[in-house]
Length: 214
Image (cartoon, rainbow, N blue to C red; front, side):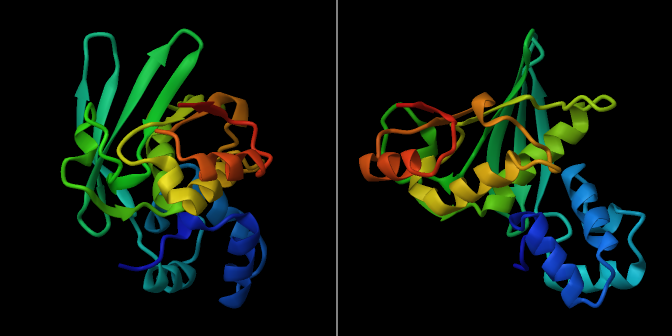
């Protein structure tokens, strides 16, 4: 599997583009296109030479929706396929105050909670920060209208224990709340954990004002 370009924040994308010998404004074009949920190959303002360089090093499509189930109340459940063929699930719940997306942080889970099917086959692997972010980007692209985001709230309570994938989850939180990106307010993000105390303490030191549910 190639790299996941959605792992990179804007500054690192600037460094990447400069390393390819491209002008700085290309980094903004690339970052904007990725934030809009586009594949590298779909960002039409980028020259083919740059896209070819990027596609040599990075996955064009780190995550795609392969099935959508819609309930009578408008809730949408997604089956996502990752670039390596693994699958995860996600949900978009629609409320009067906005749309809340439930995202996964691991393929499978090793926590062993009896009420959860995610743990039946154990943990396969962690998701990268960009794979977590891409779940939001592709769903947001489906539901965005004009300048209004399609995803206004996020809950980390899909498959996997978020704090068991600590560093990737923290990087995701920083990238999804970054100004200039999709910029979801940290106050509109909830992280659900089965209570990994050392990681809960570490998260409290990160300065990320997300909601924590135990």
